Image (tube, rainbow, N blue to C red; front, side, top):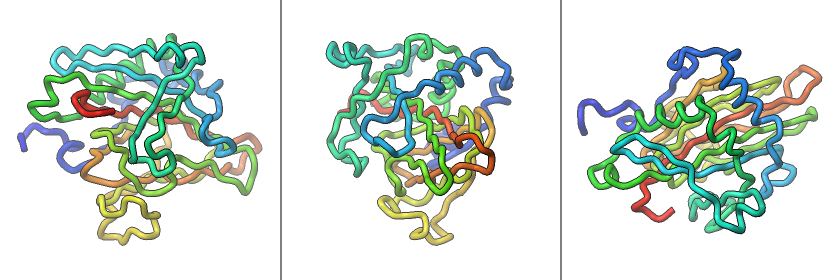
Length: 256
């Protein structure tokens, strides 16, 4: 493996503080606009009552020029304001199902911070000789877990250690408010389909909690399995929320 390969590609996971990397704070206009995009996220149409809200968009990244373009929806998806998301058999809750998810608006897609995140994510990836001369498919998800009542939980999908079937997946914290839980666990691949309590200490590669805006982590899918726990409402009277931007990366020479 080349000496200059990223920690992410070498060990299977890594973490960053993108607020420091980009030199911005919570008063930055692009951050505030991106955060505002989570105010009107619709409920996940495939998980009614789960406390999960989301939008989705698809793009193409050219590794040789570092150009990025958003992909159009199909005619029927565009009429309904949707984009299609397919994971094959990697998500046990939606095996071989194309999920039509509410689309991210054009305004949000053009947000400079979001586009800078995509460029940063690419800089951490590593591709073999074949993949480096093919376009990369980039799926971008705005996901919010929202819980309004004590004693209930909002859960991510799937609610188990898993692999996504996409070579790299990045998670960027947008904000967290009055929320407890949501801890991340990264383990060896053998624990795909298991629960956190099934993983012995020796196979827990890292555990952490994202608390601050623009904290980020990523996984190299074939090297690890990963899990994010459900959230619960905190002690304040208002609802608990955890808002994340996910970006997954797939060579377009593979089926997607």
